[in-house]
Image (cartoon, rainbow, N blue to C red; front, top):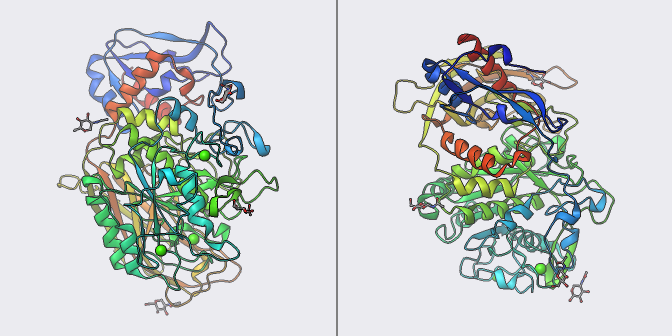
Length: 602
Ligand SMILES: *[C@@H]1O[C@H](CO)[C@@H](O)[C@H](O)[C@H]1NC(C)=O
Ligand SMILES: *[C@@H]1O[C@H](CO)[C@@H](O)[C@H](O)[C@H]1NC(C)=O
Ligand SMILES: *[C@@H]1O[C@H](CO)[C@@H](O)[C@H](O)[C@H]1NC(C)=O
Ligand SMILES: *[C@@H]1O[C@H](CO)[C@@H](O)[C@H](O)[C@H]1NC(C)=O
Ligand SMILES: *[C@@H]1O[C@H](CO)[C@@H](O)[C@H](O)[C@H]1NC(C)=O
Ligand SMILES: [Ca+2]
Ligand SMILES: [Ca+2]
Ligand SMILES: [Ca+2]
């Protein structure tokens, strides 16, 4: 029992917190739970609101009474009965698409899926949204893709023509883009292959991977192709995943991305979805400047039983996860989708398969609310992604300073299409974003632990009070770069692993030169206070290195994001009695703040 009853004596004001709505799963009808609605003194309003806003997910409003909450039983989400699912598709592969609706097929875990059924049931199927697949081309003659193909928004940058048809090879090497396209936009109910996540969306092909060398111009042209017509760009490529490369977008591509988020979609910003990489535990996606960019939504993958795939890379810039395969022998545990020359496949795989699923979910959200900006999409991903039944054997799931649950491998969890469209529907654009250089340390000498104490530009126009992305721009050299290990801890106590060991990286010359390591894990936190950077070596041999610079960059808002929406969301949930929406675990951060709030008002 966590009981707050001893505090429940004050009058006049109630803190309406998510935590108070959380119910005990084992509770039977009529049982009183340990959750109370609490009244506080009238003059506690400011404090209550402050605590509420500090925690991003909660808010406050006036009421009169204190009462214990009655407990009742609700079925846990994720254990849907196959007979309850009212999706009837004629497509032969539909029941193999466990990532759409996981009923336990292919030895999977029931309920571990993208929850698209709920989004579809609400009427969202991607209508009016175009997703571009930046890849090796699309078989746009495929009968399951042709009707959703957006030829006008397509282009072939590998051979400079408007027809991004894949180049033929005997081994069907160039099947990647076609498979990705099917995951997003394969037509529904046509007796062919399967069904796309956003099966009424349009898909454009941007062929750009199939030439001897990649160039900055090809990347930049692809990323900035028709940004008023293309809403979402899906990329399943990046620097070589050999565990020793540190690389990212060059000048033109960086500029194209910046232009995309600032000017694309009529100023609401192009949505860039990025696969976090296939380098496995030997690589770190924070060494991939595309995946770790603030302007991309970096997506990792889980397999159908919630474990990580063996090729999955971990890093603190990953925002959320979808599904793929690569670990299970069951031939139907792969990603079922369209394949070259009118075929279908059950075997699509890699984080490559994960990014298009996310693009599909974002298309559903954009149909629900076309006003969403590129930042709204990231906020929605943070708020609605779920731990579900994901498990990571190496890294704990933790809660950050505002109670958001995250994991080093899966980000904020698996995308939930139903949750996303519902929240998108009610969403108000997040407040303006500001950028603050919180501090910089040059030439640290031999120190391995550095601290920057910051007011986050408070008192200036660019004060950042509620964090979105945080970047640690680091210059460091080492006798063995791969043995470097860097952590950063926020003032609210959230530790991000900015760089983990990469055993294959034996660079001893270049090191990291003003490299922007990024973390999403401090999302929503108050950045004021002391940030700590810890640099160390992990490995068999002793190494030496010099940390030459650490500059801390904070990005976020001055005013509290989404307080209004949470209240509205809560009210509509309450109205619909959808208590099963609520998690069974009490948010520790809320508990802490409640306790301190209550004791102040006692
Ligand atoms: C699904 O659709 C098929 C073809 O339209 C129909 O024959 C079948 O009865 C439907 N099944 C359900 C459960 O509605
Ligand atoms: C692909 O489709 C073609 C035409 O329908 C068919 O002849 C061929 O056997 C299929 N290939 C595979 C590998 O399924
Ligand atoms: C989108 O923005 C327009 C103009 O501000 C507004 O009228 C409309 O209601 C908004 N739509 C949604 C779904 O929020
Ligand atoms: C790192 O930089 C320092 C100072 O610039 C230099 O003395 C040292 O040799 C460098 N170490 C490596 C491994 O490059
Ligand atoms: C960084 O954090 C990891 C995981 O908690 C830990 O194993 C490692 O020793 C830390 N490294 C440094 C340099 O503090
Ligand atoms: Ca062509
Ligand atoms: Ca189909
Ligand atoms: Ca990588």
